[in-house]
Image 1 (cartoon, each protein chain N blue to C red):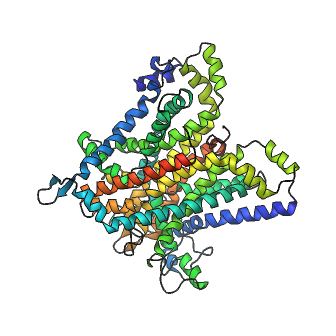
Image 2: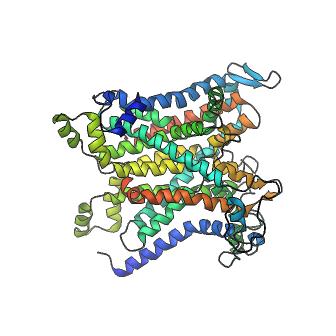
Image 3: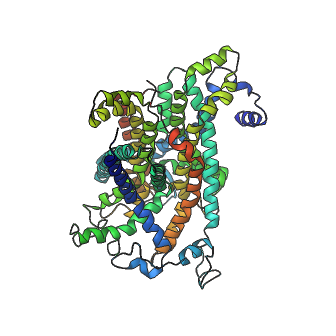
Length: 303
Length: 291
């Protein structure tokens, strides 16, 4: 229905009959169809899978009841992975939010050169995270890395490398994430800032408000919805962090950079525990659903 | 209202911040274009490296002229001639962006203009489809694709990339449509225009900046996606992020080639961004002004 609608829409502006009315369903139908096939199906498949396990001897899936779920609650590596994921998400989100806001305020100017600077900043976004991971792997290489060399000459780093040390490895991965995604926040905040009306700011300056007062009382409230949506989108993606840890540390050293996504991946592909991998994924989904719901309620986002 | 010293200070700070962010890209760029032995120089060379187009030539099969020496296939094969992979990436990113943006534009217009019961929960549900860990989507997709012969095909990857971008696209586009006053729609409705006509002729042209911005983000997310392509393709096609892992071998990483691929991969994506750049920043307003 919709493909023919799109086709006829292109030929002339003749209206597809279904889209003439005021009923939202025809408009939403393609979206719902895609989400049912590609989102609802995987969801239920995972639930089904979480009650099964791959039996290597039979080379088939076997019903195991709630075994995967009981294993989940006794699995200390899972809770460790949850802690690391939350730490990773929390720190990256906070840094990207604050840094993104600060840089957006800094670059929000019509002076010559600022357009160019904004363009250069978007360059970080077009590099695939898998390659970004390799890039920071080289920068933090134990022997030849620029970061390692700089930190060592400043006396901030002893004999160990950044990624080889369990206490700094997560930090090393976070640097890559923060480098890549802070410009994403800058871009969104800049758009919000640029779209603001100038009158309130002008009258605030006339009234003698300080820069901090203007930011606190005018900029921040007007930007609040943008900030909320940006934090929500980024938070969801951060919680599923996979590429950087997969490429840079594969979870190591030890389990110091094991995120939930990586743990689910490894259970699925390295240990061929498909059922348990699905269970971890569902658990991860549950956590982010609860957090996102609380966030939406707290920030009073309404769609 | 700002003194000139403040302006200078601001410019200096801005250039400094952007330089810090640009540094890894610069360094990566020099790795791609330097003589291989200088990659492992200590202290690391940042500006005074010896130029060599060898890595780039080997990865893309493009000659810069000069004395590159080896022409023709290299021993081992496989890890050069990345142009077809670049093409795979472009086809997938462009098609999945087009699909995601058209489906999301239709839906977002309805979500912005026609209220229905449970709408807030519907949007949250759409968003929640992005919350699944990628592995949990990839496995079921693998089996369903195997069933329908979509494994290792453009169609399969395009569909899954479009799906992955739908929640983001719907959320963004709805905000842009929300920014356009509903009075315009209402006036046209009273004049007897159909919803489709209003959408096609009035609202969509007004939201073009937002649509462009959404398209850029969809393109970037598809361009850079790793896990779905890794699991849903075998030999038929591979995108740049996945193919980069072929440079990590048991005998070490071919940093020069890896960097050359990374630099080469930035070019088409950046061209796409430049094409819509004017609309980008203006478009990404996320409904900041309403309410």
